[in-house]
Amino acid sequence: MLVQKILTRNPKAELYYDLVELLTGVTLVGFLWTHMLFVATILLGSKTFNALSQALDDYYLSYVGIPFIILVFIMHILTAGRRLPTRYQEQKIIWRHAKMLQGTDTWVWVFQVITGAAIFALGSIHMWVVITGWPIAALTSAERINSFWWFYLVLLILGEYHAGFGIYRQFVKWGWFPRKPLGYISKIITVIILTLGLAALWVFLKMGGA
Image (tube, rainbow, N blue to C red; front, side, top):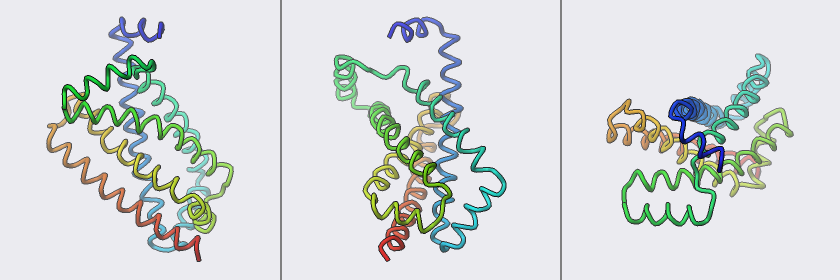
């Protein structure tokens, strides 16, 4: 808390932290959406999924990309979480203000905090399981998802919500795009990615249960 108070008094430091939060957030959203498109190749068949996975390994994209994303993930947690209320009394005040203001963006921020904390826990588990079970293949992925389908369903919903509304909040914060059109676009992209994720999850469940 002392470090946080010191940083708050330094506008220049806060600007740097905000820029890091922006860049890491945009990078993670781009990765998450690209990752979901990769997972959705299972809809084209296990051969397509395995061929893409093998190509990422052959060109060392996986071995470079995964450590990079983990580093970005940690940096985003540190920068985005520096202002979060950690004390129970602070959390009560935030919750009371959110109910009093009744603003959509206020509730979006509240749920960003909740989903962010959940993604930190679930995403860390997912990354550990994937790395220790390398290489990625359709059949092994199907067996893992079939055993813990509820875990991946929750992670999918929370991740896509956090990504879609997170990119919306960042772009609105920096004033780059009009609020309403940006809100519609982020919702449409979120629905499309979520639909692909649910369809891929269903295919993996069928494969794992076969």
